[in-house]
Image (cartoon, rainbow, N blue to C red; front, side, top):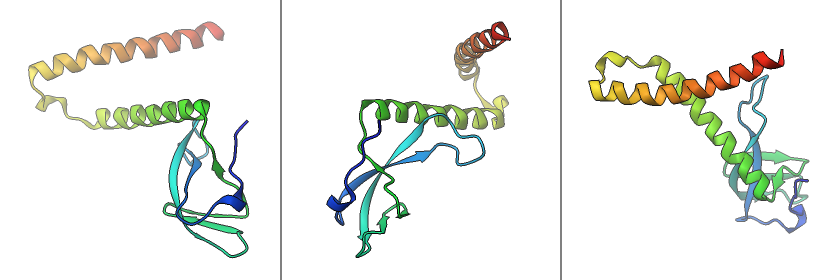
Amino acid sequence: MIKRPDLKDLKVGDTVYVLKNVNPTFACFRYRFISEETIVRITPKRTKFITNKGEYTNCNPFVIPDERLKAEHNVAKAYLFVKDFCYRFSKEDLINYSDDEISQLAELTEQVKNIIDKHNGKEQKNE
């Protein structure tokens, strides 16, 4: 169960945490980021909370992170890192790398390939 702070207790300058989707598209990753934000303004009726990173209306988007949410945040962060790396790696021109760098990349890429092959092997067995 996600714990949420009481909106009545929040004041300008407080640090709050908001769960944000990793891919704000049709298909989102299974975990969300924890965004640390600071409240910069609250409307008099407390219907709108404005932070340094966004504006939230008529809801309580704030959470109190526990160990499970922190672990999910770390996986979401790792997911984005891998996704960004794969994109950048596919755009690289390896011809400009030294022999040692290519050898190091080959070793690391083999480890990645083994993980992907292991995952693909599980999918084929389940079909």
